Length: 134
Image (cartoon, rainbow, N blue to C red; front, side, top):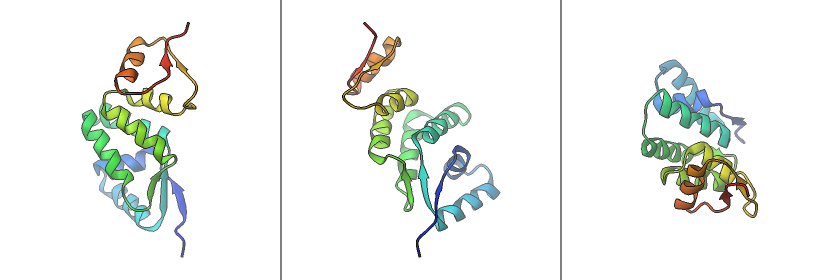
């Protein structure tokens, strides 16, 4: 019998990662055991913000936690190749949101920003096509 598919919201993913609410964690675990779960890049971006801002986790811990979460059977990113590139750029030093923006555009088109630090960091981690206007 095929598993029903569900999309996970940020709060469900965070419960699974940090286990700070036992009742919600149990419900989320049951969901993982009975459904095929999909996670969008936007949810992962919000998870990163919560894990960094509220739980005070460092970049490497967050990147590893998200990688391990996405390796669970019946859990997948909406666009797995794109999300793997986002996580790699994030672990290498690019802001998570900037990595999402850079990798959601077509590869042969530029992402234009006034944020010169973003342009430098993108180049440093091998993300091409991020530039200032002009």
